[in-house]
Amino acid sequence: MRLGAKGREPALLRWGLIPTRAKDKSVGYKMINARAEGIATKPSFRSALKARRCLVVASGFYEWQKAASGKQPYWIGFADRRPFAFAGLWESWTDRASGKRIEPYTIIMTEPNALCAPIHNRMPVILDPADYDRWLSAETPPEDLLWPFPADAMAAYPVSTWVNKPGKNDARCIEPAPQ
Image 1: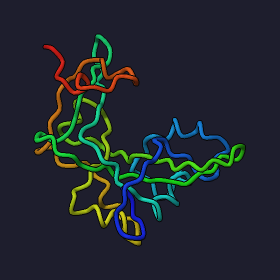
Image 2: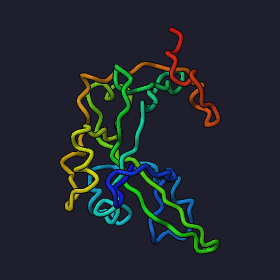
Image 3: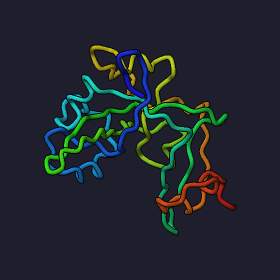
């Protein structure tokens, strides 16, 4: 979701921000996430933070916890499974060779809350629904929103390594892992 002429509008964007100055779209693979700290001063994100903020709608996300046997994936979201939105930034980039226009985005990451901290050292910025309009439309970027969401309404549990394969996209991705 992003701000359009008539308010919030859905948009199909490509994950992995490509700065307007980039010569090649492959840089987007390195910019799927942006650290909240210093985001206002980093050249790759500064312009988008000022003028192209978006909401990335989700029902959960994954993080991987390091374990002796490898990495254990966890599903993380709200205990009641309600959808939510991450704070994001988007750009408009044109491929110089083909002339094709791409609208890529990145998810803003912050320090983990108490639920996520044992699993991973970062988590996406989850916005409170009351802050959606402010995130999208504030003239000055509302950096005060770039904090960990309180853990009390959230849940996390280990899932199968089935989620480790990008082509896998079915109910098994959110089923609790066998104990």
